Amino acid sequence: MQSAEVTAVPVLAGWQQVHQPLLFQHQVELWVYQLNTAIPQLSGNKWLKLKYHIAQAQQAQKAGFLTFGGAFSNHLAAVAAMCNHHGLQSLAYVRADQLDKHNPTLAFCLQQGMQIQLLNRNQYRLRNDAGFLQQLQQQHQHLLIVPEGGSSIAGATGVAELDLDLTPTGNASHVICAAASGGTLAGVINGSGCKVLGIAVVKDPSLPERITQLLQSNDKQQHWSLNTDFCGAGYAKFDDTILQFCRDMAQQRLYLEPIYTGKALAGVFTLIKQGYFPPGSRLSFFHTGGLQGLAGLHYRNLITTADFALLSGSSAG
Image 1 (cartoon, rainbow, N blue to C red):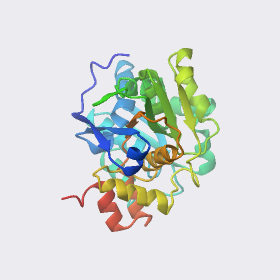
Image 2: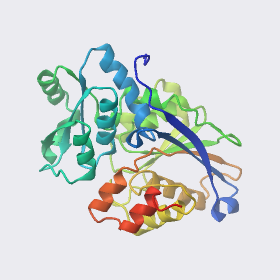
Image 3: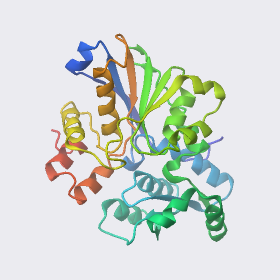
């Protein structure tokens, strides 16, 4: 895939080492890789998962994207920002019964020029149905359909360009990331030469199959695994333990949210405690972003104003 025509978004990438007594006790080294962009909604994995979709749209002379997401979706915010940045149209089919313009995610999307159509839960289940997608494509022939989460071969190709194997202190023994729609984990597997561990944050029996469909070769099957022990009550649900973990990490200026990266990294700490990683292991954890979702959690009173400020880093001084 070529991306020569894609207008670059300024990117600042970097590593952060995590220091905790548990890591010292188990002789495990933990590095977190973060990729921040000049457009916050495109930080983490978002710019990577969308840039080749932009190239596809340009090559096919499409006017923009048609995609899917929940009412507080990081993906929707990223698509709206990406399309606005490139002067393209964006249309989202959103899982919601009514359009809440005070919802901070949807308000941002509308501000970026995104058009929104609503689907109820039953309708939304058709988002991957071939017949439904064909019908939408016929209605919107000028738009490129981008799957939920940007999880496609194009999305995985962008993520695969990351070098997560080499940390500032040497080669990683394991590369780890959260997994929800599967595209990021597939891309990490495609781009890595060491063991890859995905931490599922959603209860979805079809997730392993979707990941497998996005792998570049059968050889990649041998060095990855998906842990499903840390989904908790399910996607977008978290408990006080996860929230406290995010607070603790924020004290180290590692800012997480409790839906994706916070839940996954807390799972990594549990695995360390259980002795899953041999002594001497060096872990590379990919921070997939998603901090825009904190505003939605605050809006729904799922986190306090103080937690919103702490976890987003706005209280740091």
